[in-house]
Length: 317
Image 1 (cartoon, rainbow, N blue to C red):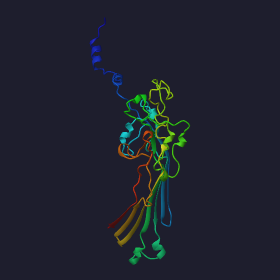
Image 2 (image 1 turned 90 degrees about the horizontal axis):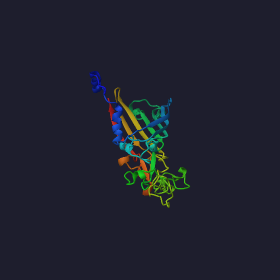
Image 3 (image 1 turned 135 degrees about the vertical axis):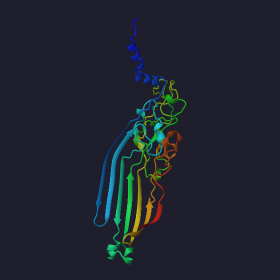
Image 4 (image 1 turned 180 degrees about the horizontal axis):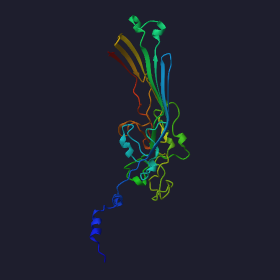
C-alpha cells in the first residue's frame, strides 16, 4: 500500500477537475445540443452619375446567396430559428436557403432639377421665384422574393409519433418533379393557388419500425412516414418592386431663409408586392409555410402598403 506525501495530497485538493467531466454530465443528463451554421456570398456593385442638366442617378445592385440551418430576426420572428424541420435529429436536415435570402436586389435613387426657370429665362426674384426650385426625387427597388417552406403535418415521423412538432417536409408524388410544383401564370392569377398541391403525396411514404420505406399496403407499415424529400426553402415567393417619389418646391424668401413644400408619394403606382404564400405574420412573421395537409397555398398579404400621399411645408431660417 502506498501513501501520498503531504505535497501530493495538497496538490490534489487545489487542482480543478477536468472540464470533460462537466461535459460528460451534461451529455448523460440528456441536455440537447443546438448548433447553427451559416454562409453568405455576394457580388455588390454601386454606380452614380451627375448630369450637367440637373439629373443625378445612384444605384446599388447585389447578387447574393445566404445558406443556414436556422434563421430569424429579419422579420421580427427570432423564435423561428428554434423550429426543427424534417429530420428532428439532424441539423443538416434544416440546411437550406436562409429565410431572408434574396438572389437579386437593385435599388435606384434619382433626383432631377426641373428646368422651368431655364425654359422661362427668369431670375430667382419676384414672380420668377415661382419657376425656380422645383425638383423630383425618387427611390425604386426591385428584388427577388424570399424563400418559403412546404411541409406536410399529416406525415408524422417515428421521431414524432404524437405530432408534437408536425414539421415533416412534404414528399413529391411519383412522377412529379420540383419544376412542376409552382403553378404558372401571373402572380395575381395565382393568388389562390401559388403551389400545385397535387404534386405531393399526402401523408408521405410509409416506413416500418426500422424507419425503412415500405409500401402503404405492406404488413410492416407502421402508419408513420419517412422524412420528406422537399427540403427547406426550396421555393421562392413572388418578385417584388416598389416606387417612392417626391415633388419638392423650394422658394427663397431672403438671403438666409426659404420655404420648402413637399408632396411625397409612397408606392406611387399603387402596385402590390406580394408576400410568399401563407405568410401571415404572427409567430413566423413574413415567413411563408405551406402545409400540404391544409390544402391551402394562397397568398394572404402584401409586403407594402397601398399608395400613401402626404404633404409637408418647412420653413428654413
